[in-house]
Length: 502
Image (cartoon, rainbow, N blue to C red; front, side):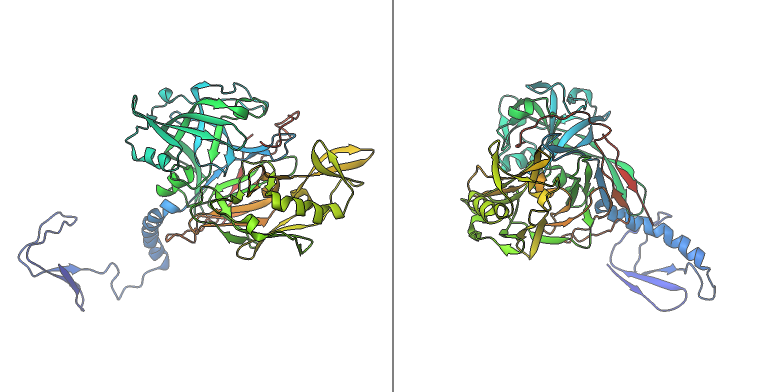
């Protein structure tokens, strides 16, 4: 079928063909071609139309356009609690609402794993209480009207098996999983599908609620540190790139962009910002992600101290079949340097500035001041001319005071795994960290994470872009909600302010 617009007034639409049926508002069928339809002007050429009337007409069209774009135009915000400080909490966590009716769960924020899982009501070894003074909740799929089990034949189970997390039992046709973490802990269980309830912002609008069906784990068994109550939470929120990650699931449904960001407060109050979307900051620098890796691997080229590059072979940082490379991991409290880099960092940098000592097996220093300004600035230099500038408190941890002097210890630990460097919360705090998965890059900028931030849904790897003009911000202080401290191992409430402005 071909259509021609002919000049004249009124305009006629000529349709030619052999047999075409056109459904119009009056629902009639045309036949006997060629046929002409008269197209009348909405506003005659001799009629002057007030601009307000034109705006009203346009306003009916724009929502349809925005509705088509809204599948990638929502920023999703999560509250953040916790702190990197291993003597208080040693982790950052958020809250999720799952099921129908929705129930609230506290989950650790972990960019080093992929899957969201929560403790199941039938869990063995799961803690029943938490020294974090949060309620421990278990998930029971039988009490949610929107829950369903994932079978082995479900294509979503295949996404898990591709990353070696899922397995299937022929006896019950149920898709199950087993995870092991770097600290020796582990969990196993089965996959379910249920609703996750989200707080979203679209364009300039005020925050609104949305929900989506996602697949997550129902943990029936836990081991290691996961069984301890000193910092127990309901589960772990994996922010990895694999197909069953919540990021991948929500992005594939068009609910959120293929990017997320966090900004973790480093002082005693803790808290921070966690959004699905890109935090926008003028001082951001970016480095490419290394492709086809199970973690967020980036290419560390060198380490500088006060502008001087340390004598470390760059190949010691490389990602290869025999070396783990450099990983960004918010689920790790401290930071870990490969052995070949750790010794030069200690001997060629910090030790020359102050007198070292050993304290509880760690490399430490006694300084007269309670603040670490005497120590040098360190720069981690990555591919793409992207440097991460570390203040002394980004690589040091204060321990005790001795006769008015302070003991500061190196927060960087020597990696126990050959060829791997892990940048945990010690380094990531007080910085905007953007995971732009659409463009396969990670960006950062030093920032006061208690401040407001601008967030965009734009991913430079995407085709449909929309900038959120609202602002998200604020930390969730632990000062009023946390009393007492827990002595945490080194390895291992609510209310985020949302202000929308024009």
